[in-house]
Image 1 (cartoon, rainbow, N blue to C red):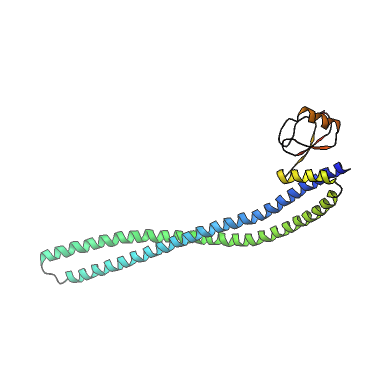
Image 2: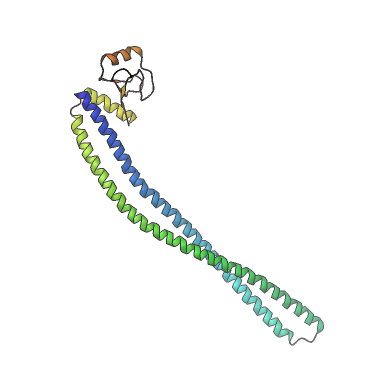
Length: 236
């Protein structure tokens, strides 16, 4: 009876392991979602800084164009009063150079305007994605809370049953079983039909194997890993 209860106890422990893994997986879903949101916020913030830099560059170009046009206008007013041919030629060349400079600055400014527009559109998309993620995180948190609550209730019920079953296992056998669980976790009770431990793979020595076969259904410790082995008959 104690041996049957041990098998049932082991099944309950494996069920508890599975339930706890599922609880951890639910929590991990929230952690992963939050991490993804954090990465998107970081990306959004970097794009904001990039947009600020572009806007500063745009303003500098606009000021440069204004200053250059002011110089051009001043020279154009001056040239009206010049009577010296050499000075007139020099002013004409300088005005032509300023026009070329203005054209170059305006081309650069246009490119910056386009870059700003693209960054603003991209940033708007990032903002929407973040809002969607924030809404999704709230929804996910509620779903996870509900699932975890259900799983923890199952854990509580299973743990209670497990406690009752453990009372029906002989103390010495229970002690060996608990020791194996503490050392290895997971499955530590194996039904064997051949002389090998399914936990560690060690071939059971002949004298031990004979003892197993003479006492089918009785759990024995593997001399190598300490897991419990139960002989259940010859392989079919």
